Length: 221
Ligand SMILES: C[S@@+](CC[C@H](N)C(=O)[O-])C[C@H]1O[C@@H](n2cnc3c(N)ncnc32)[C@H](O)[C@@H]1O
Image 1 (cartoon, rainbow, N blue to C red):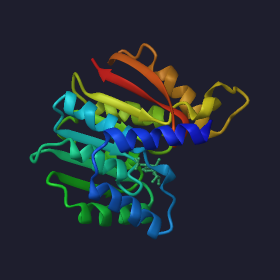
Image 2: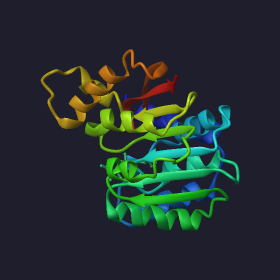
Image 3: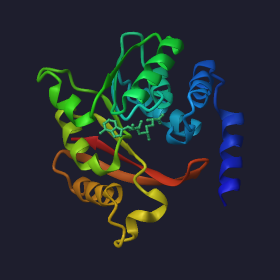
């Protein structure tokens, strides 16, 4: 099935998605630096994130897990000139590549890359940091329960929180799988369930060029 899913993603990209040299350049730079682009969201997923931001007129976006900034460019495409995007990356080499890619992309909105563990960076943000309108969680899956709570600290009523890769080809159902990433995701589902600070929440499975995975989406009460 993987080939069919990839061919269909290519078809969607060819028919529905805009050509954007900035996105192509990020992929090209990533590969030239010897990294696999597999960690990045697929183009149609990037567009889905962009549309969520556009639908809700978001101005302030937080991203946990930048990698080479491919998703960052999709998120930033949706922001107005006076928007702000903070993206946090734990690996210095990834953060450097992301900064280079963003410098080259020269997006009109203010984008800040902070290198460091996402939890540390968030805990160090000033208490009076204005809330984010949209939060994309795409770093180490084992820490997603912590990232959810930290995200709520920097949210307002109506903030949208999207958590990527929450299905992992069904591995979350295998209770014999005790990898931190998988137990972290099961704990995330428990945390999302009936969370007192969330208005609504769901998860959507996805298949495509990145395999079988999915997003969880929550709206803050
Ligand atoms: C799936 S990739 C992000 C892909 C990117 N959002 C995209 O779609 O283009 C996950 C990234 O999270 C980073 N990461 C892992 N643990 C982290 C942590 N504790 N804090 C911040 N970033 C972390 C990894 O180095 C990696 O670059």
